[in-house]
Image (tube, rainbow, N blue to C red):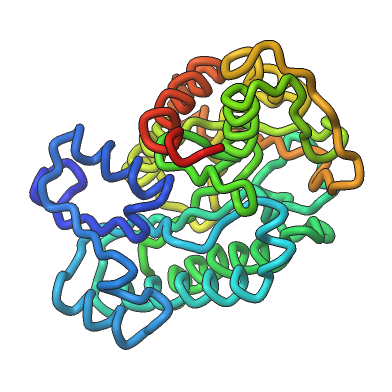
Length: 316
């Protein structure tokens, strides 16, 4: 069935995560009624036999492969074995099962950390494998690159309609706000919130504040994923982002102004900065006709409201 039929069977691998939950919301809004999911307790995506059995029983026609082990600089630095093993296994089992059980189309979602640490900016799709990776997330990046190459290999050998998209830094509802494993935006939201609740007017932020980051609301990404699934069927991966970036200092100031305006920023320069800049070249996606719609201030404010509704009672 085409991806316009509301009864088509669509599997969202990783449906409880930041990206997966947004894709499920997007599919439901469009009227799809046969969205297939499985929790980690129900299906270990690192187990090929179990994944094969699940695909045999459920026969998805489309797959959004957005499951994985993710985290910020600290999590990547302290858990490198988990990050490379879990992600390589998850990518391999799902892609192979999708091939074996005749999935019509699969979209694999990578990460902007696949590009070299000192990559020319903005980062074009062609810059993949053009230089050394950022050391703080190299194992994760290698796993993500392997996922892209896996999809390309199955296309070449079997003619599978497996595609890859590379999103920029994401944020939004269902993000991870744990300070030891979260990415920069949710971590800053929580830090400023805890300072506000405690009456502290000083917030410590990792690094120098000089690295630049591009940020995309996860609901925009979900919309882009559906757009790409319908409009892209090439071996090359495609970047998904806003085409705009700002410094970590500017981001921290925006979050402070929304969450805890009196706070003063203190920079802990003993902590790593990560890549100096990560701005995606989204010309290819813009040429297809897709652009993001959520402004950064609007997105931060809505994400903070979500945090207050779901986490504020346990933070601080």
